[in-house]
Length: 420
Image (cartoon, rainbow, N blue to C red; front, side, top):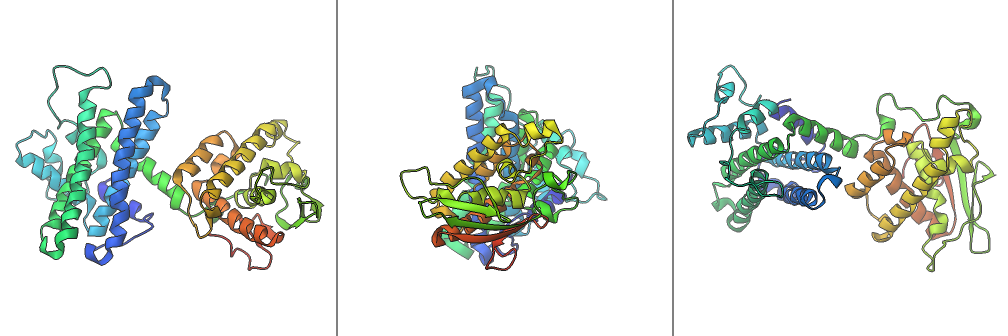
């Protein structure tokens, strides 16, 4: 993969796309700029955790790969918004380093006139610049070595230098004519620093890029029902072990401070209360199980209450539809409810924090729902809370769902209108 191939793919998942004259979309530039600063801090924090926890921090390689990929993504999209080719930026920094008299053993790899200036392979670049760094210190520290701290600190410092270019531009505007070229220089330095950090962690730069593209596709790409090969998890089971493909759902008060839910005319569990000192509406949380079932094709709790457990396959019945999986789902429901309660129950919200989605993915990675992506979970959560708010406000609700379409909606609104 070369830099420009990565840049094109990264730009496709930019939720605030725009390029050209930066003054025409200054507000759109703030997200990737602040993202760069945040990810540099996250990378330092991951190294700190590794120094503190040592080998017990087994997530360290994955987390570092993720943070470096996020840095590359934000860096790429800053370049895109300026109209720079990322490969051109990398090549310009290569020329600068050569002009300083530094020895680059593979310097001729990009000197062929027939080779596209923007077709620099990430691995070629990393192999070249892995040999450009500070001289060895006579003494290594006992906490990870100076050799990795130097590029780490340099990377963070260069992010600060990039922000300083914008600070000057904010102050002086068009009078600061050198701003675009200086930004390009800083981006080139950042690419080199990022490559050096990856080399010190024994990470392949192309692997970092591909990990990032997979992550952002799972986060911002189309939901699973819109992707080729989508299939519900119980597709190959008998009808009595499959979720109903269409559901007509009623949630009503029972006159005793509890709510009752029916699905296709059948009771869905027992009457519910909030189980809380305050009236927080948790008694309507069947909505979330039904939202998971409708939009993810997964809900061990709903499967049990609908009496659709896959008993014909004892291992699946035990692992996917059993008590442990139900506990995981109930834990997710409670955790997400607490998350939403601190954010006005997601009123007016279309996205949720990636760390929440990552936690859910990690909790469910041993289950079939691991095949669903973060975009699916986000839609199930946001849509579930939109319906929940309506039901809570009215004290009752009539809901419909279509599992083959991956949709759930209030019955008095058009099908799919609650999807984000």
